[in-house]
Amino acid sequence: MQIQKVLTNNVISVIDEQGTEIVVMGRGRFQRHPGDPVDEALIDKSFRLEDHRLTSGWKCCFKRFCMMWSR
Image (cartoon, rainbow, N blue to C red):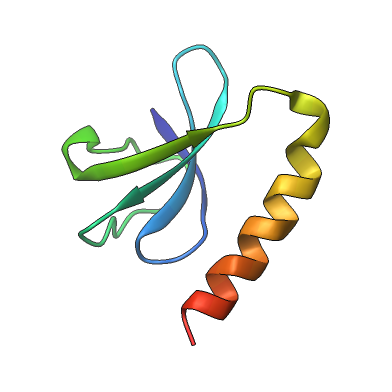
């Protein structure tokens, strides 16, 4: 898996081996940058969108959740 975007210290968007975007959460800090590989041992939860028509709406809602949660 390769990091596509860092959303917060504990939440990142990654691209898996099949080219699918997955949002992953971890208990530790990922401390990585886009393009870096992901240490899969740090992943606690992963979220994969099955209906790709909803991708843009999901990203928007998830960003809002992360901003509210980090306050």
